[in-house]
Image (cartoon, rainbow, N blue to C red; front, side, top):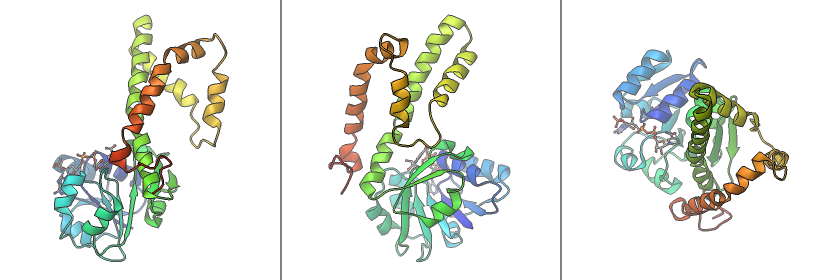
Length: 254
Ligand SMILES: NC(=O)c1ccc[n+]([C@@H]2O[C@H](COP(=O)([O-])OP(=O)(O)OC[C@H]3O[C@@H](n4cnc5c(N)ncnc54)[C@H](OP(=O)(O)O)[C@@H]3O)[C@@H](O)[C@H]2O)c1
C-alpha cells in the first residue's frame, strides 16, 4: 500500500516503525527534519516528500499534525475521492476534517499510542476504517466505535497513562529508597503491574483481579483505602474533559 504521513513527529515515528518490513511504500513529510531523516535512514520503505507530493501519491494519508497547524496546512493539498484519510489529531473533529480534506470522504479518526511500534496497541476508531484494519489490524487491537463522542471518550481515557505512570514511579522511588537498587525496583514494579493486565481483557477481568487483591486488612486493601481520594480526583479530572471532548451526554452518545 502507498501510505503518507503528514507531520513527522513522535506519533508518526511510532507508527512508521510499526509498519516496517510489511512491504508498504511510505512517504513522510519533511518536518520534523531530524525525525524524517532518522526514519528514512532506519526504515528502508521510507522516503521524504513535500506535503503536496505525499498527498498526491498516497492511497492512505495519516494526519499527524497539531490541529492548529492542520488548519493552515491541509487546505490546498490535493486530496481526492477514493483516498483514505486517517487522523490521529486531538481537537480536530470529523466536521473540520471533512472541510479541510475535501473532496476526500473516507475519513476516520483513531488514537494510536507510542507502543504501536511493537504492536498490541488499542486503536479505537470512528467511523470504521478498512485502511486502518488492513495496516494495523494484524498486530493491534482495533476497537470500532459507534459515535464520534464514544471515540472522544477514549481520548479522555487515554490520558490515564500519564498519571498512572507517575504513580508507578512514586512506588519505584519508595521501593528503591529501601533497596538502593532503582533499576531493579523499576523492573519489579513494571513486571508486577504487567502481570495483572491481560492483552485483551474481557468484561470483568479487571474487577476479578481487583477482587483477588481485596483481603480485608491485607496490604493491598489497606493501601487502596489510603488512596481512596485519588479515585474521586480521577473521576473529577475525566469529567473536566467533557466540554473539550463534546461529551456533555454522559453516556458518550450524540
Ligand atoms: N504523541 C502521542 O503519543 C500522540 C498520540 C495520539 C495522538 N497524537 C496526536 O498526533 C498529533 C501529532 O502529535 P505528535 O506528538 O507526533 O506531535 P509532534 O511530535 O509535535 O509532531 C507534529 C509534527 O508536525 C510537523 N509539522 C509542523 N508544521 C508542518 C507542516 N507545515 N507540514 C508538515 N509537518 C509539519 C512538526 O514539525 P516541526 O517539529 O518541524 O515543527 C512535527 O514534526 C497531535 O495532533 C497529537 O494530538 C499524539
